[in-house]
Image (tube, rainbow, N blue to C red):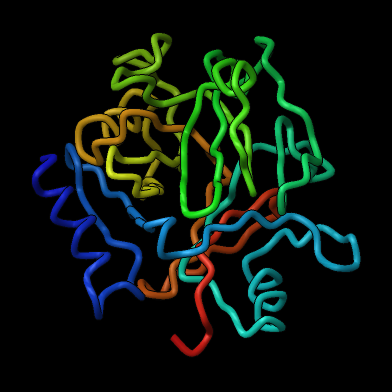
Length: 245
């Protein structure tokens, strides 16, 4: 399966196919959409507030904002957990400014199921880092979002994931391959944490992967003709490309 996944990720980055970004795959008879970006070649950016200070909340409003720059979204998805007012639950960095601090303590819900982690986007680099490791040696992040739990930590599934769990939701997450590719995935139908983690560990080959959210998970993938709608989101993460590309 890793050989097939590597072929899929490579195809998405070949000249003439880069605009696609996203691909439908199947693992263990479950469907997923996987979107891949090389952060050295494609800008990955987090969005939450517009110039007026209002929550963007939707892919449509992000597209409108980018249009003023002559840019558009190659793909996008919800980018981390948030409070009812759409503010981030944990660490949030935008354009190098820390707007919300990291939370390292255990707590209720999925976010507090330690270890949780942070997606850090630097200049041409993407990393998924366990939260306490991040705090012990904070890297330079132009954008960062905290969520939880970690799906894969050092090549192993989160220790609290149960093979026979009955908790199923449509879920989305992100991992980084050993070659530095940022790989985002969303399930077509409800899956358990263990099933979703296995996708990142066994198929996508990401030594570290982070759960972004479930139930509210949504994807914007123009190359697949997909633009999910729903209630306003908090942070949104997207691959930004030239509009005339």
